[in-house]
Image (tube, rainbow, N blue to C red; front, side):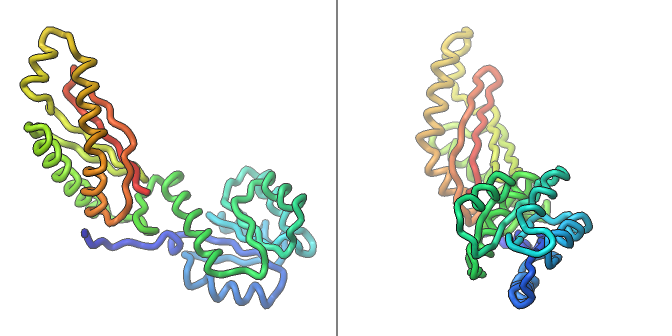
Length: 260
């Protein structure tokens, strides 16, 4: 396994925590401060909006029932300003109407008080992974994301070697070249000049392209589990086959996988 200098997703998140109960806020601040990149706090919705404007957090955790402005009003105000930060609400309230109204306002999670810190952290990690994968196109592996481009290149080179070996071992002919790109949660493998002499003969008269492409696609689909295992060893993370496109005219095979 490749050892990398990786940073946890949470340690790179800005989080705003809004809670009017001093004891609850102080206890959660102690817990969260050690785990997130930057923590901001407020005691009500009005102060929460001001703190939000100053900090522009990735995640907002807010109580619902608060003085001056409740959590729901604050959430709606944030959305009205055009911000799409992920919002988690925490409340002892459990009435369906309030929950549905909060969902309509754009929350991603409802956590019932008393808060289970472990559950909250797991929720934040899942949200953080989505943020870095989808918004920032970072590669997330085992709840950490790779900052160093050299580390990513090393991963790509290892996958390149394994893919070339797989193609040569199972088809009898290795590719002339292979390119591997890792972006976000996507792995793309491009194999060039992979057609065997027999396949080249079949398409030499500009016929049989569909037949050859179908068989090559089937070749990769049948071997996808083996390729998944090889990449999982390299990344120490689950990988799933997505799709393959074979272009006989260009003599290029494009195989994609998702990092889970």
